[in-house]
Length: 346
Image: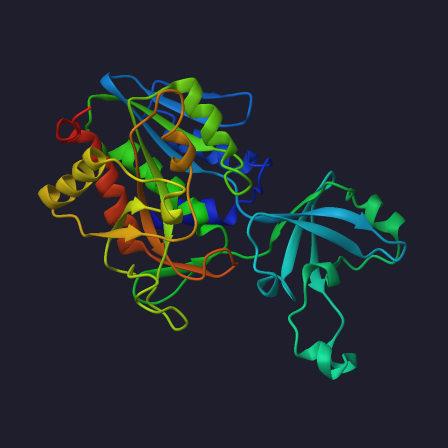
């Protein structure tokens, strides 16, 4: 699973440009499902035929990223953000511009502190005061490299192994969820019908989940995601009790109830499966943030939905950190939940 996750994390795909990730899912699940198709939104849907009920697994393919907004006469590129960036994490990063002539590399720069006034140095640099330098001398040189308005941009960051079975990289949100979904489909012995869906544009409005759930109309859904870990400096336990190496995270409610409030039978299904199978888990009640489940569970007449997540540090940056042990427990929980579907009363 580590090699699968590495392949997913090192691939690139901001919202609306998820092609690389879609191809990996297709390659990984071919032979494990009966049909794989891509819908008009770009969601990839892998179908494993079976009996009732129909279970939808969903994990979003897109990562937060940037897009070229303008190019000045000297060849410096201004950009907009796709998704929930904290501006300070962007400054001085290396980036990849996915232009018409292939990948081009650049750096995000700004006015250096040496010539900032005292008041300027006390403030964080905002995106409006950043730019990308690809080494070009003019706008014409940038365009000659195949870069134009609308070119998508991602971080130039590769997955690396830390100690204690922990890894770091970009886009663990939500390539971790994709890996979890793929492994669950490969491992499960469930006789249920399974829809494994790689959704598009989650980071900019949960868009792909909304349309794919409407099309498939499953009986129940599990969203494979990441959860904010609260076990490092800067976070108090009262704000997040989720810890790395404590196992899979089962969401009770997120976004203070404005997102998902998991139904009692779904929570019971996931918790009883974890207890029965000896899977480590922890519960999450979150004030902020939500997932594809927020729109799936209110599709049509309503689809009972749950979320299984991997604790993640430093989310929405290029150095997100997870434990492979937690990913293993999460994939196992999803796979076994589908086998223990009798524990779900729907």
